[in-house]
Length: 68
Image 1 (tube, rainbow, N blue to C red):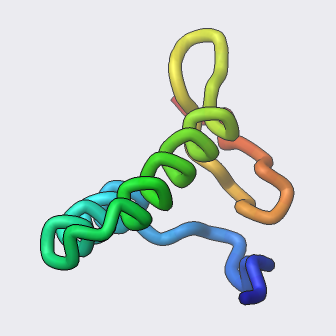
Image 2: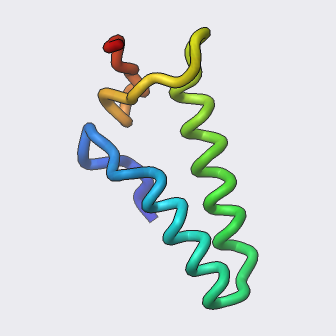
């Protein structure tokens, strides 16, 4: 599977996380929960700033937004 993103902006992570949760509930396969855990962990690591979390401008470089 090619993991290189082809878009700079990511889709809505909360919606994707919810989809993974519902897939796990429907299939009873814990692999979906592991994928969600990896996604949330990576998202938090990429967006953490001293005052909270920032938006990501480019998912390929993890460049963050500097807007208030």
